[in-house]
Length: 250
Ligand code: PGA
Image (cartoon, rainbow, N blue to C red; front, side, top):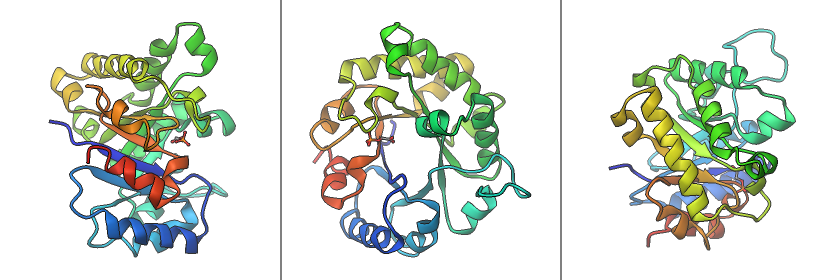
């Protein structure tokens, strides 16, 4: 039985004071939640937010990570630095990283392997553009990103990988994939992981949906058999819009 996993990706929003304030109000409300819950503040807020979380089930996530461990990489943040401030999970391959910062599947795969080697959990983001969807290539694109992103990842390491299906055209646009369309891609992604690893590995894999998920559509999306959680951007920036998603089944 897979445990639902609701994650907030705060992106490049909130100052330290605002991030701590939001984290504190979430800690107050998320106590006996049956789901896994994560918040991913930006790098400058991680340390301060980590100090709010002890005793809370809320997990601390980072939004990105360097592909190398240490060295001359001006502007980058290492896996060691993330672990040092208590990060447990790292989001990798987000479409904004792929499209704005030209991260390739090869770079993302390097990051995935490095994070897993250091014991972190990974949320590997995949998703097709509108053009690719309209050309009928959504599943092909997503499956290729999964295969490349997980290259040389062992079955043991896979147990610390979550896949987030985020159709690029649905991110921050207010357009959500229909639950049926999302389900189709999630089922295909799960089958792909079954092919690459084993049926049990596929069965246990958590696949989140991301792209304009909100309090109004979360329940319907989460009702789909292969949708196991959400990666939420805009609606994760306020407790009053994030908590109803966390509590989608109440
Ligand atoms: P959104 O972002 O919820 O604002 O569409 C989701 C994401 O990019 O992770």
